[in-house]
Image (cartoon, rainbow, N blue to C red; front, side, top):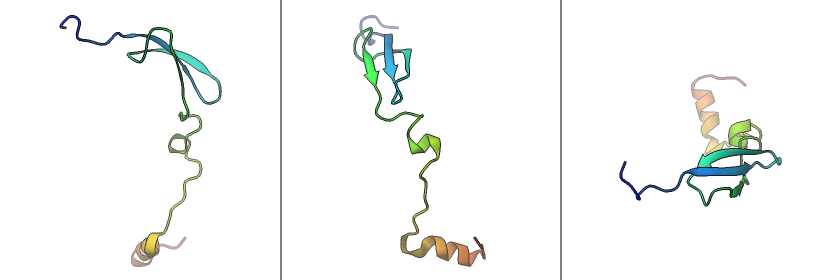
Length: 72
């Protein structure tokens, strides 16, 4: 590796939305800093699967179900 071109890699604290904390290594900020997450795997629907709905835009889902004879 070339010297003096890479960012400093140090330990930081991460605080999840429920208050849990953990330490990790990162190039973010300075050593000992804290990141407070607004979105994390505990609360975000992309990871939890909660709140997902199919939005039938212009009847596309209905057309698909009718074409392939799918009964819900």
